Length: 264
Image 1 (cartoon, rainbow, N blue to C red):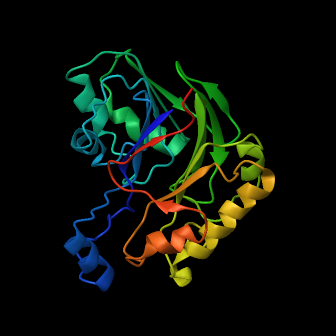
Image 2: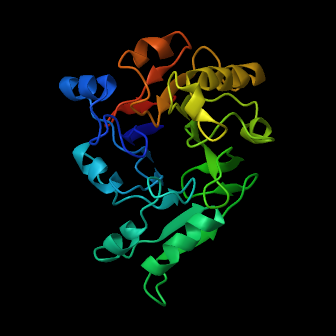
Image 3: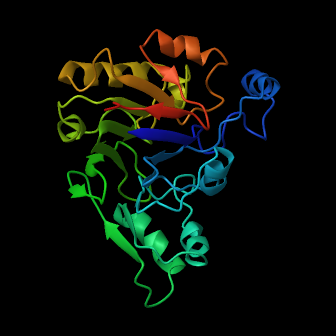
């Protein structure tokens, strides 16, 4: 499984263009720019098509021509910019299925021409299991109110991926939906760093991130060979977040980073 991290930042990215805090200034000086989180799996599955995602792919040396399935986690604008449906229609009539919770799918409808048949919009909810042309997908409950339901995704093919962004501590039933079968790669949000006062119940700070990973380890879904990568990073993290995550057996994702899950 080939996983391309198109973006690894929170809604406003990191650094924020509107901020001169120490974290933002340091990251600007380093030239480490993270844009809103979006992921491309095996060139076929695109997760969270946010407002910068299409250009993110081009900057990473990829395109979206072979994408046949889009997974949307929730309706917030940093995770879904439905204008991609219009832009795609100008050059392609290949079949495409867009899956997401009802509020996200509703946002997509106005971007499709009446009577078009190339794009199928499919509402999903936590607990659903689906098969795409290339992968099996399990829909997982997220602890993140987002104009209605928000979800996470487990994707299985030649390798297994858990995409868990956005979410607070595991929602009721989420670990059961993820299952005990081993994961090769976990992409888990870590928005607020040491700012536990901001994380609340809809996002994770470092403490919540560590507890969430520990819970996956306890089920057996994560083991020592599983690669755990923090995404949805914001300027509430310190510039040394990589070292902080290493103590939890994790790493910080970077825009344009390509990860491999189980070569065969």
